[in-house]
Length: 198
Image (cartoon, rainbow, N blue to C red; front, side, top):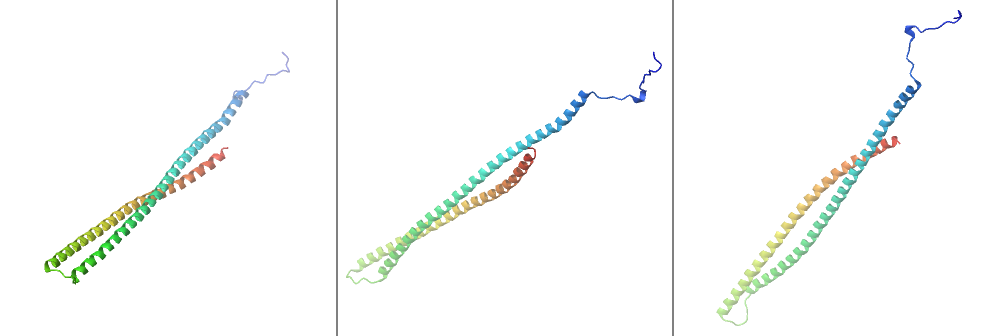
């Protein structure tokens, strides 16, 4: 062996592990793919949440529209009921007025002496007939007035119940509107988050 050749042996402290180029490439690829996978999962979850929120929003809006139509129908029922009742009461009051005129006429005839010649028994019979007619008219007037009063009470009660239902539906619609506004904000936020991942 030549004296000029020398072998450099590594000292124990100078040994170090040098990774293989293939191992370095694999590690680097995993580091890159992991954030990409997480981002894809997050984007999928965001899109799913956006779809669910939009679906719930549509359902609530449909319920709100249905309730508004119901309120409109109930108001129309109240108006129809009031108009029909008013027409019926007008007819009853006209009938009561007509009976009142007949009653006044019957009383007038009772107390106005009749100039036609007749005996005492005939006069008593006429008076009795007139008094009976007066009693019938008074009874009929009382019945008509009571009937009209009952109608007014029933209609007032029905209108009150319908109005209570309308008020309850109005409260529900206000609640749904508030929830819809909140959902709109959520959907808008999710949409903006989803656009960031594209």
